[in-house]
Image 1: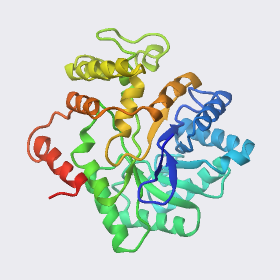
Image 2: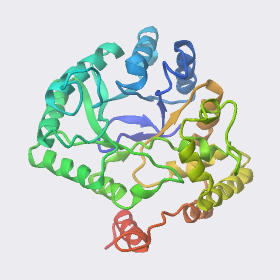
Image 3: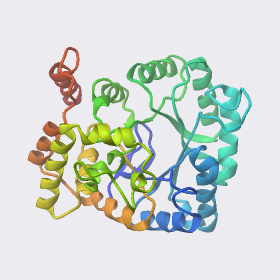
Length: 343
């Protein structure tokens, strides 16, 4: 397992993160603990959760594991999130000081810890003044309740605005962003990735396998059945499945992923994850798992190194479609100059 700095902080985390949205819903506590054990045995150190995952049960399950494994817990880096409703009252959501104070204390209690390494704002809040949120987070860092903070699902201008407001007020800066990012969803490369590169913010991509599409388990024009999230609940996301199934780009990407996987004798999922790990600004890729076997296959991506020619093929097949100024060719050229330090 490779280890990387957590964005612009001094904390070090594994290049693969264990996402725990399944804990308490698709994986019971015993299975969840087995998944954590397998992740740590492979060298993983970074766990990601949120106060709304399984209505808080994900944090409870992690907290119980931390309590039962005090020695191993010392090496684990914990990330959680706050923002979404945790009650019926008008102040039980958002990024106000009032809600975040309550949400953070509740997460600390469920996790059974004195501080959280990375506290993430789960989404933008257009109603709360940004300086109120940032001041609370700076206070939480100063109080030792959190080690650092980050964002999730923010736009490029929102990231940059927060970075420079924190800088102007000498507050602790954001260190990470958690966006959706994978070979089929690359639109963040237009503005969000450059904004993160500019501020040295680390990316923690979620849905790295595009809901299972990049694992190669779906076949053209064959609606999923059986042991998949869509197969077990066909009404869930079928409209999105049909749109992706009818998109020729989907199958062009999967063809290249399959070719590269066969060349290395690995799974399509491992290739898809390895491509993401090689992208600029990516700190750690979030893996979700319902069972240990699923996790173990994905963990194989940690040791997979793709050739430059393979990265190029995958990049060309999956390139974002917008090709008008200031995106497309012009945008990619500008991004490449930013990465290499050129003008």
